Length: 229
Image 1 (cartoon, one colour):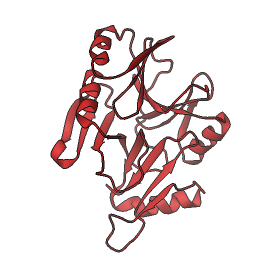
Image 2 (image 1 turned 180 degrees about the vertical axis):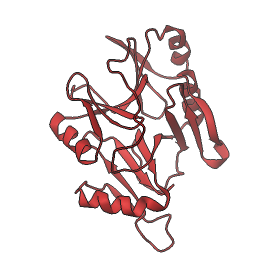
Image 3 (image 1 turned 90 degrees about the vertical axis):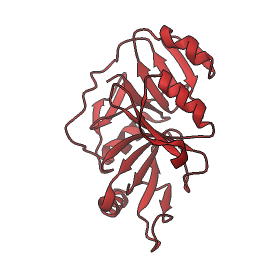
């Protein structure tokens, strides 16, 4: 696994407590701080320059840097590069081996249900597609006419990009999606019992006005869509 999410924090223990309460596995508490839920891996970074985004590890990114520079802004950092994916998401291209042995567990441990991958919203979806394809993601389903497209890379990390004005709810770039089918109302009830703050209660997709989808955020602002499907 060479593709993970990064979330910033101004209080490392507060973020660890948030994920622990939700049932994430704390793989490492220091340098780097890593939590996981099956194939979801998140680095909690308390560096004041850290931003929410996607972090990808490879020994050498030079083969794609020139191509990426033709489509987006990109800056060099001490151990690699940072670019904008075209919709505001920071992508860290780290030129070193992964600092942790990221191995997906057989089952999810969190209270959020079934992880469905990273979700992004883009005001320029064609540009976003080009950039993510250069980063090694290939289309798996969806199309522009539907308003969304899903991709996957060699790490089996799923990524969905939504066109602007398709999602009738708050959207935080990037977010993680969890799709739970008919189990979502029970999962939402359990999240309430855990006293996890809910950023938005969504009734838009329910004819009876029932809250069957919610959005939460971690202390650093990383979003989580807890949806029926």
